[in-house]
Length: 412
Image (cartoon, rainbow, N blue to C red; front, side, top):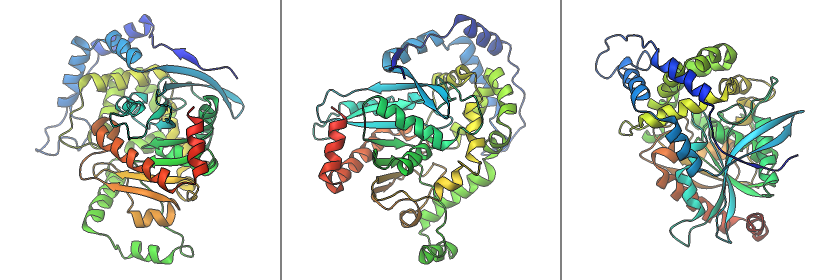
């Protein structure tokens, strides 16, 4: 296989002309008149879409954004073989100058993208010299944004995890740690299950799991059946149940007919913007403000994919062979040190005592915060980075000397 090649984002002018034409001629349909506090009940309001469209028409400058992305991120692509085909993986790779740095893979989900790693790149050179430094790798999921798309059905979580594992080894990182949320957390959990000798530690901010099997842990199952929860646990679980009941229409559409919905999304910049912006709203703190340039840039990156991959992952996630049910029903072994950060405005949750029964045998840190949502690397990066540092300290203190030495050696 070929070596990684530097990547510079340079969108063809013809594509930008197409986007400009679509935006300038977009029809923004009128909304209903909703009672106060119910504006989002039928979907993203016209009052939110119209200012974004106007901003895109009059103020947004893709070439300026493109230059900023190229200046901020050291990007590469590499061809990797998986399941008989070649996937061109796009990834960010920032190496630390610290001699004690260890490799970390940062895995995004949907509707996020590789730019979520921007603030986390500070971990290559922490201000506190006592904090751990990292070499950071942030891949784009196959079929998402700038990574190529698989050409056949069945390219699910296990295969994506295999690609990530191959990527880290291609970069010389035989052992490494990982951090992820949303689909990224599930992909890295699959890495932990398939390659526990490579992934020394995993930190996630999307703690979700299945109930224990009756014969495996009847006590925990009894607690769940009798709803033995603290008030805060009840609140977080109720939010997850609300989201599953009221806000997962997008995943059901993408999980059943990903190609059909993608014709509309990839042919309509405003349609893609509305689809993405809707999910950004309800998974963040009310006080958090999404900047128009950020929303439009995330939309642009998905338009550039020219692929239904962002939707197809939901279809693959429903499969019997490589779906989320099998993944969530498998417990991560003690060989992988798990750290968890839970944020109240996220849409997945399990209490620690439940996770200890079904998620992982070796949970070394667990933090439940009172603020933050689904995109902590964007919303509250300092909190997330602090949790990552605590988790790595726990790994250093509890892992065998040989494992820690292997991490340090991998980072050389």
